[in-house]
Length: 382
Image (cartoon, rainbow, N blue to C red):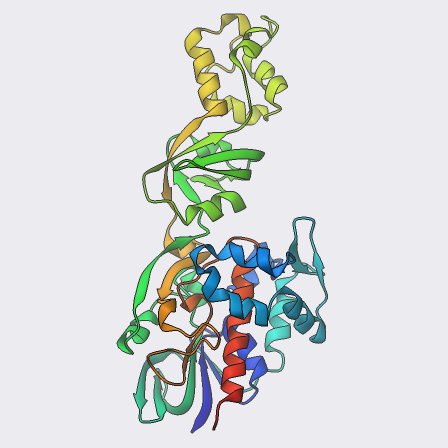
């Protein structure tokens, strides 16, 4: 009889295993923390430095649910844990916290270097509650356990193991699964030729979606737009929504007052400081001289610089950074992360219907929810 089985070798599951040395950790792929290694483009934005009251506002409508865990094991506790494991961290100007090395492998190694009882390439295919213990069946054999922790993630980046298949098992145990959809996703559009804009970053862009405004940098991709602002806003986007981009403030008279012999592209660049490579794509009149601009040309300039309308779609779920949806958090105790339906079953991390903004919030939740489960498992009467 195993005391504790942890299912899922991502950040939450590996961290919890480091706190409970006797636990058995099951990971369906051949390595641990695969998704963590690509976080922050491989640098691993592990948490954020802001005060707790502000921190918990970055989880949308789940502020009350996640508050106890963030207070129990928030940014400072995470940094202390990593330091004790030999990993120094630093705070970037924007408040994001990274390992000093800017190497996600250091975070992974801190989590997994002392782990025992690791079961790689072993997928849990069913869980059955029998009296006061669980029967956990894998693709290799069957185990009995007193406690089971589900840390299987959402459905984004399926090649890392988080493919959403485990929700079927949780549903069979009686849990409600909030429908899965992309969060922290790029947006796809065919309203403009983004292939020609690929790689261009613009700062201080205002994006309007359903009357709500967001401001920050955007990056053009081959298929659309991305960046922290776009990804945070994507949680509220439905396919075929319209978004409006404002790249600069511009006045019609300012355009008309430019030297008539100046090329339009040069004049607009001087007025807005927008890169010519961008203006060349969004302005069909870019090669005309200012004196040659018609009313229609000026209207196009105004619209494409101050209110460019894009019809957008979410990128595929398997390409999103995190998943919106999962096990209904109303069925989980917010202080222990124990299921309210099945005794001694714990559900942590992205497996729950919690998603945070871009900036280290999702990793922080993975650690904090795992820590609360650890306290409950350690303090239970055996």
